Image (cartoon, rainbow, N blue to C red; front, side):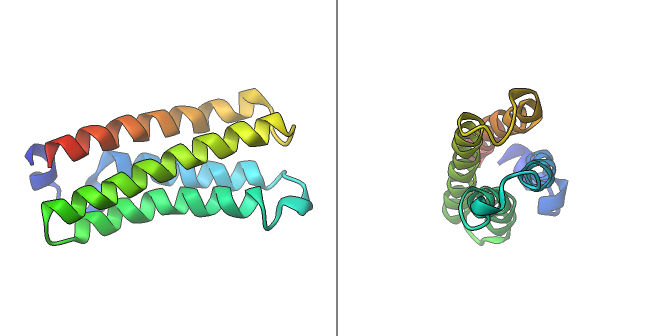
Length: 121
């Protein structure tokens, strides 16, 4: 479990901190979406971003490596969900590519880091 063993709290995980940055970025991005998307993409994007952060924390609190791995898988799936929904938002003209670069970079980094964390467990 290498790094995972030395981590005292989920807040010590670099991936969790990047996921927090992603969540805050998603909230900022979706502020400019049309109100017609309030219960659509706005809600879905925010929910998926919050899910990434929450699943990392919940997995860290679990008692077994298997449970931790499962929650890391859920977090990774949610990060990919955010990436897809950002793509759709761009295609619908709700947001321009330059605005999405940071969020996409975060999604890619989170996905990579979660894959590595899962392997280390």
